[in-house]
Amino acid sequence: MIAITGANGQLGQLVIKSLLQKTQASNIVALVRNPDNAQSLREQGIEVRKSDYNQPDTLTSALQGVDKLLLISGSEVGSRVSQHQAVINAAKDAGVKLFAYTSILKADSSPMMLAQEHKATETLITESGLPAVILRNGWYTENYTQSLQGVLQAGAVAGAAQQGKLFTAARKDYAEAAAVVLTSENQAGKVYELAGDEGFTLAEYAAEISKQTDKDIPYADMSGDDFAKLLVQVGLPEGFAGALADSEVQAAKGWLAEESKTLSQLIGRATTPLAESVAEVL
Image (tube, rainbow, N blue to C red):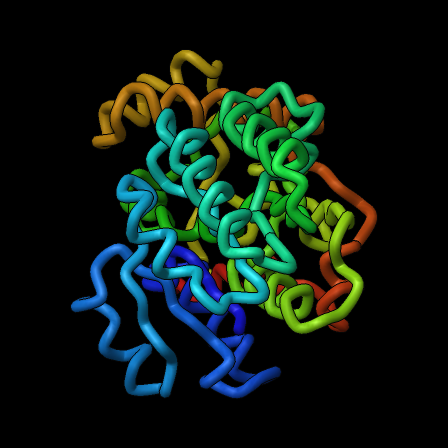
């Protein structure tokens, strides 16, 4: 059986959608914090089990009979290492034969603040001795397009990436890659650096929005500190705002660029173009 943590989340749901195209629903286990919110998964014939990173006992029972496990990294920045450790321990106790983890692009060397918990988790996985495969996901295009309505209201794209190239891909692209890995043989020991086929600057992102809306949407480049302050003003917690601003500062130095096209090779098609992602939201 193949189990997916965070199965109610945005990426988790898409991974399961892709898995259903490759294997029977009876082979899939959805691990969720609140099973009451997973009725749609049950209706697809998928077994739902309670799994809470902060309640290790639920992890032990949730992984019974599981052969392959995808740990989708937790969303609680600052708490993820201890949460991931609990899942790793439970997977080892359950005798999981393949442990897959969604990390971040170039996690072992990236100076990004958001990379540090991923790097620590990768170390824990290695030390555990589990047969593992690491999916180092680059930036999701949705990290930008989810704020598109706000961009239109403000009349500009704000950021701190200067002219740094962002090789983003749609969340569904990364989900499909995870499904491919989970349904393929001989994956243990592999590390995939995953990113979109084509890079773009935030100025080019603004130009694409301008083109599709017939409006003049410029790119307003800011310092990391000023961008962090802006993110706080629009409602983000200070710590998370700082981490996102830091990511853009590092993107300016090339840390979100990846030209290997490993993602498109893995899924057997081109990654979703920026223009298509923008059009979907508009």
